[in-house]
Image 1 (spheres, rainbow, N blue to C red):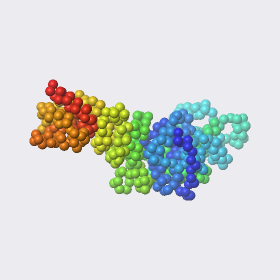
Image 2 (cartoon, rainbow, N blue to C red):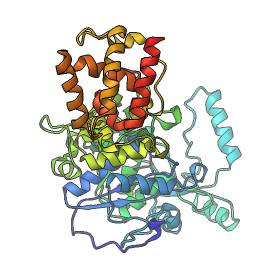
Image 3 (cartoon, helix red, strand yellow):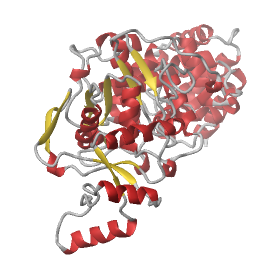
Image 4 (tube, rainbow, N blue to C red):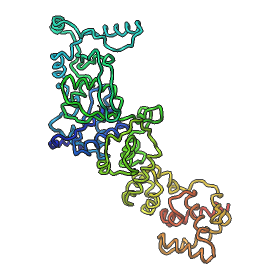
Length: 497
Ligand code: GLU
């Protein structure tokens, strides 16, 4: 696969904005994730900065085979190209978290040396007992009781000498408040007494997710951290880590969730569509991206349709909305329709052919004409087959379909019209739309009736439905001469029965 093609990333612009998209490979790209990727990409590109892809794959329990490929594929399909990543190593790699595991222990130990973190030797049994005691005492369950925070030097040395397993915990301030500013949510303050002495390094020497995330962001020079607001409540702890190390803090930009409705988050696990599902249904990747842009962000004017370059130009992360965004399938359809209408006829035909499939294509005499008629009627590509089911076979239909007040037709007049048209169609010199139309119109003029009197019944005879991509003459071209004549004869028979 081409992601194994490794290209060395160019040097970063000095002092520029650096953002990262840090997905955990779960096997699909849900639309909320893709929106985060887009906003993260735009924040870097608007400033002429660097966009990094970092794979956060340390949660082995959630690891899914092929999931990283889904991330690459989605970002490539949507044009969100990254400057540095697993396949574009720069000076700040590796860019896959599981390959960075050797980095973190030293940082955790540095904090221990500086008195900002400590070894905790509590066994799992003790922690369980602690939780049971908390429940019995009617206290909030979960927070570590800081049993090892003040062990004596001698006790620590003894435990280490005896190889007692330990984790490293961060020493949270016991009093006061921690605050930080989020570009979207504003000034946030928490009482330090609410913060647990979180584990930084596990007993196997591996970092916890939160610790690795902060150290990686620092080492990779990330200036703007964009992510879902589910991380907002952990951010005070992240912030305290930056302070403990004396590192520059990034600008925090937390995005509100993408909701299915007022109560439920949109989630693949609940059966909601992922990016791949939407594309499979016939949404264009550009349209999905454009929809996601507007899902929780508003531009200054009324403009709705943005190319990627226009998104970059107009982007301002401060305009991300604070309120949860509700996924609106109708709006997505509307935007998709705009993108479909804007395709060149050739591009639309290519996409439509892929949906129609070879079996049905072999029954279509003029695909270009069919597609010309389909393009202004198609909101989502996946709905094309339902519009052209009549090509395979005329569905069972009621002769009442021939009733059309405007055209002054009914089953009796239709029988007459089709009887008149059959020899006209049989003798049309060229099977082209113009020639067929001219022959039918000449016949109508001769009979002193409107064209519709003949052509409306022709459409029903050929398709067995009123909703067709094109009128009777176009359907004749799409189906071809032999099939058209056969269907007109069958309709005459059905009307005579
Ligand atoms: N790996 C995290 C996720 O996929 C992202 C966390 C972050 O951006 O800081 O949810």
